[in-house]
Picture (tube, rainbow, N blue to C red):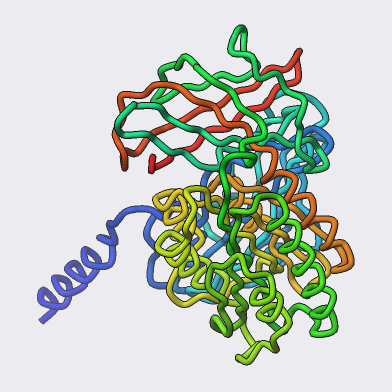
Length: 427
């Protein structure tokens, strides 16, 4: 009996000691039956931030263990750097996460010079295997903000059209760059190989009409008292958009817990204004940003009449989508070749600037912020100006329609630098 008992204990010890398994996204090991386990990204790239402005990203911390995860005070290794953690957005420090729970915080880069930036985020916790957990932070400071909006290839001629937006630290379009192809300000690389630019045109909107889907957040986290001001700004935007080019069209999408109203693409301003003024009919208790934008991407790709397309999203960035994630939205926008311009309302209950900025930058759009809805008219006007002042860069490519490409666009305007990289699907 003693021998059997010893053997049973030995077998039990073997079984409990063979947890095995792979790590989390942050590299953590598999939890034991009574452990807390932190899981998050081991690195975070904040992309390009314009000097005098900032770039934000959201970091999600999860507890993938079976015991409560107690998080200490999160900090930066170099507190004097241009990285920061806005206190209003830190929902992690000092928090206890139950198993399977998660929390978020925002990281911000505010560069003071045209250089590359690095730092380390330190996350202390009661995870005995990874205490503290460290996240490598990177980002770039540049004088100019550059975005690849859309890419269109002519299958018969092999000419690739690359539509590019260039903005300053205030988000206003930079319209005075040289369009000469002799010692050009712009340079393009396709899949790592530098291309010869044959033509630079600006503004591209003069000959290229655009279809814009305007997506408006009616969730309860944005005060209902602001709706009238928001709708007035939206109507002004529609008027300016249709005036910019007679071929321009727009669609209206209102959402909260679901898409409560949609006006299909049209250049009829009366129809668009009526849709904007209409009362939102749905439940306003939640904000399904990702599901709504994903649906709007597919709708726009299938129904927008013009080759150039864009989505403009006004929201606070707080999402409760049950189906799609931020990465789903970014991937779909890239595949469908549709940039997303985001406007975040920072005075809402719980704004998420990192989500909104990543969505814009990764899809070729532009991120803008407001503290009051009274600023919306000016922001919409600014977006209209950006859309109307895109640069069209042309070069010959061996790639075919529908090919996935890695494009790099760089600018050097007398030492004022800017650049962006984007995986695109040529349409």
